[in-house]
Amino acid sequence: MGINWFKYAAPTTFYGLAGKLVPWFSVAAIIFFGIGLYIGFFVAPTDATQSEAYRIIFIHVPASILSMFIYLIMAGYAALGLVFNTRLSSMMATALAPTGALFAFISLWTGALWGKPMWGAWWVWDARLTSELILLFLYLGFIALQASIDDPRRADRAGALLAIVGSVNVPIIYFSVKWWNTLHQGSTIKFTGSTMHIAMQQAMFTMLVACWLYVIAITLMRVRSLILERERNTQWVNELTEVRA
Amino acid sequence: MSWTEFFAMNGYGLYVWGAYGVTLLLLIIEIITVRHKRTTTLRQLRLMRDAGEEQ
Image (cartoon, rainbow over all chains, first blue to last red; front, side):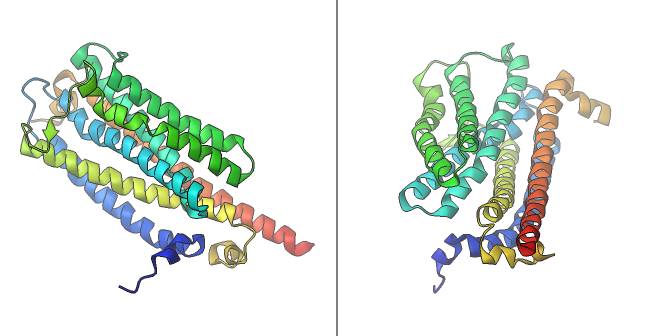
């Protein structure tokens, strides 16, 4: 294949590419959210032990998975920017952080609303919950640190260090239910097979795909503004039709 | 199953809709914020360019 992938690593070309991709990912996300919610609320049966409260799983699990994945991707981009000094990677890290923080919050919020009726408590200082809360603080710390430094390149480097060091927390969250005796249940779906009803699995995976598509769409939208802001003194930005108008 | 029954979620309505409702609200706020950011960025770029042309 004669595609020059490095071409899209340049902010100039990536800006246009991202703009073309956003509508596709947005529409796909809406379709998948629709299908996922339909299966989750109208096809998946009532749970034998948790009644209808378990339906929170269809947003809680995808949001939790995403909050961890986004962090690793963010740290990966930040590290790339730090090592290779690639501007776009650093901008991607910055663009991912607010959405990552949002998903970490949704994970905690939906978990609290599930914990209250099932455990009798909104919150417990259990290993899984505490490490997820730390993840939210890492995102917020990353955002605050970058916002506090005026020079974007220095902000990128400082943020990258925080993101890389903080990534040690992600495996802690993931393995917390195995390493410690926690109130939070372990995963129901395992590679060796699952005891979960097939419609429940379908709803969860569809919602997971929908969340991924949403994250891609919103991150591309956000990074486009970042590119414009950081490249504002270049000729190509000033020649864009949306700027010239 | 009636709609009333559906929204009641067998007594867990507050928890289930509280989870989905807040999630939806936050996603909408995020989308509005990101779109607003694009509008203000473009406006700033035009202002800067116009200021540059006057000099």
